[in-house]
Image (cartoon, rainbow, N blue to C red; front, side, top):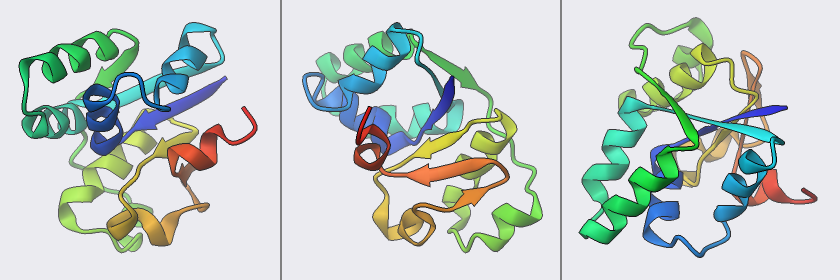
Length: 134
């Protein structure tokens, strides 16, 4: 079973547009085909950017199916070598620490150069790339 780490922008987008295509990730989890993971760091970032109570409620509902772990601030060499801004390193580190198989992010600016790469067992993809063919 895939262990999918969700970046803050994925959590934000899913809460912002609950009927959007990202709901397929939660369907996979409900069907037992994937386990959804995230970190307190990502959840806090997503929460900060939501602007309505309805969106915040949507996020809380979505998080019922997500295993959330405290972010690790320790870094391995692969994270340091990934050429990520300081603020994005805890995302990749948490995915590694949680033994995720995939890190899904829509952050093309900071993670785009890593799309398709596997770092410490974590393959970095956009949600569309992950969901293709599933």
